[in-house]
Length: 99
Image 1: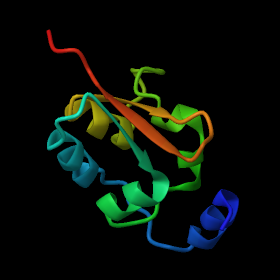
Image 2 (image 1 turned 30 degrees about the vertical axis):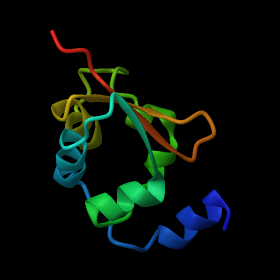
Image 3 (image 1 turned 45 degrees about the horizontal axis):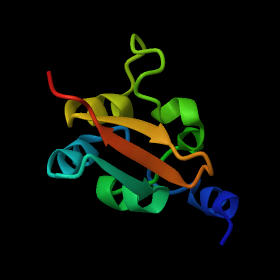
Image 4 (image 1 turned 180 degrees about the horizontal axis):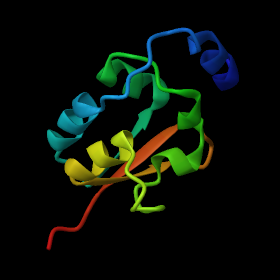
C-alpha cells in the first residue's frame, strides 16, 4: 500500500489529540536515537494520526517553540526532539542533551 493510500483509508478512523502514550513510550527508551514509522506511532497512541502528521513542521520540536502542540510537547517531555524523516515515512527521535 502506498503511504498516501494509507492516509486516505485512515481518514475516518478515530484520531487522538492525547499523546501521553507516545511520551511514556519514548521515556522508557534508552537509545540516543530511534525511528518509528507512522503506523508504529499509531499503534503506540491507540489511534490514527491526523493528515497533518505527514508534514515535517507538524513534528519538528524545534520549529516555532512558542506554538504548543501536543505531539511536540509529548516528545520534549520524554527528552526527545522529533524530526520527520526526509522520505516522509516516519519520524526520527533524538534524545536531547542533558544539562
